[in-house]
Figure 1 (cartoon, rainbow, N blue to C red):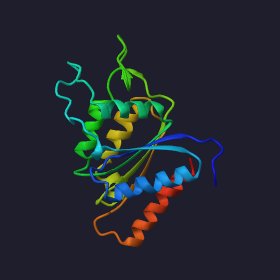
Figure 2 (figure 1 turned 90 degrees about the vertical axis):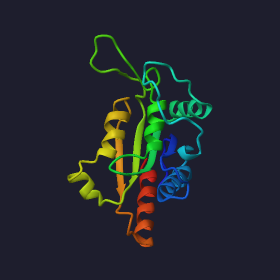
Figure 3 (figure 1 turned 180 degrees about the vertical axis):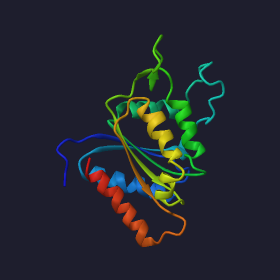
Figure 4 (figure 1 turned 60 degrees about the horizontal axis):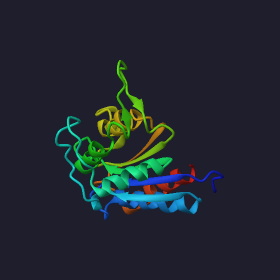
Length: 196
């Protein structure tokens, strides 16, 4: 089914390897979104050249590398953000966390306001989809671990900056998954792209 309102979509691969199941999820989503008439850009964070460490926090301005300036432009361009990433030790990979630390900065993603408890949300008007792979059974990650690696990106990053709604699709456990299970998960990612 083709949508009547094409969107500008940015897909961010948060796994360091382009030869990963997260990359396959991102590729499946991208191909389906393009075939539905959307305009799609892709960022593979493992291929970007940038320092993952925000060395002085917000006490000093740390100049953005060319790849991060281009990534900020792509986020500004996008109406819908898709993050495909694994859960490692309950959270997002260091690569994705470092990308967020460096790029979701005051003045770009949010803005402090004197006398206000919460900053202005500068990324309003965008929506997001998280495609999250894990070795932990997703139900266990949700009910026992309380989804720290999802809440961090969804609630305390994207929603904090005004991106809403942020939908989540979890895939796993990956560790003993069969080819048939992975094929079904890729079909689920494609179905999400078709429903935009």
